[in-house]
Length: 537
Image 1: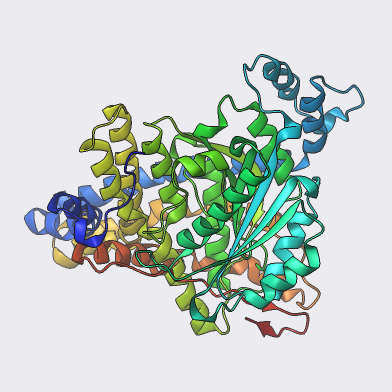
Image 2 (image 1 turned 45 degrees about the horizontal axis):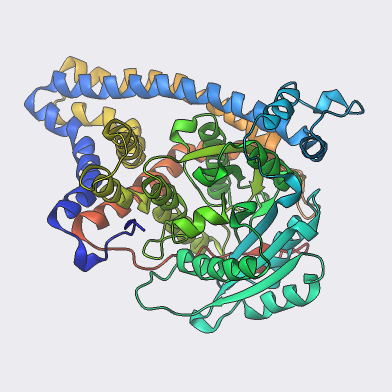
């Protein structure tokens, strides 16, 4: 099999290090442009800031439109009778008994389309493997996740539950995992508890844990003489709760996929499980992340594996599972699969949610820190810039260089804007007048920028409205004034964008510049609030 691994630190060449450094250098360069250009010529500094503001003004309009479209699509797909639609695929014809209000028009065409497949995977031959990764989570966190799988509108005798937990630091999840195996073992086709041992050469992170569990799963599947292509593997974090339609929707799309070995399936992560319990800044971030995932689902060329995602077990075998050398094994899995199959890899969106937790720790200070570390971990995906450059441009393959270049530019642009854009949008207009307070254009720039920003920020009203629509019911432990906070919290958006997005991304990219690698997965603390408002961590 071709080498698709990230090189160890000692194996990284000067060329590889150049591309690791590139995102951070570009981000810091972009941030310095208002100052540098103003020192050269104040007009240049003003023009740079204005152009940047206008570009993002247009982007903001497009993002607001996409969020409305995506929300509507999500709501429709949640209402579809996926189980009935899967039954139609099984029978090869559309039932006349359907409530057509919840059966889309395109379903009939899909049933006919499936008949034309050369080697379709029969619905009755499919199995789902749910891999739940845990580190130090308690039963209060893990059990609701398992129950959400059981509550799916799906036959659990077609589901294999894999509890993947860590040996390191005393295997703190082991009692909870063993309790789950004992309590729910008879519900599923099979339940596995896999304790991942401390292994030399692996980053201390989720990748090694779920890879170890998936190897055990592969052994079981082979003993059962099940074709690995017929096993769809979904990875969940300890707090991830699939929508009741998720398994049927995934079955439906998988059955219709021409060759599912070359496809990843991406549901929409929605950070709403504990949204009423989280502090206001975390609620804003969680809602923003939810809608960013909704927007990405409509832009398939931008869609990548993130958090909970699904692939065939055969694909995982072919890619030697997930990387054990990075803390961002989810997004990196896209690139592993892409290069393993010479560019023949796509990510298909599933417009059904996987409900996740907003960040909440034992107290406010720890919650702030945990939120920063979570986003810094996500932003470590900038390390993939060097990987894509090395495998795409300097390694012999059959992949179109144009396709690699386009994907490389999107990856690089995304991370540079992640780090630089919030700071430039918030503060860039104040640099020219501070440096050149005698230049008329420079002095007027903050007023003009304020007008543009005010119009652009009116899009917050859209996020506010849609965010309220996605909220789960308010727990009885909270009074009505909590709902008022859900509205007022959006005043914190500019601050959260700078502190938790821009600075976290800059932290990751600056670490890459100096080779200060993040060698351990910063596990986000999972805390549950009880009805009497006590926190169980």
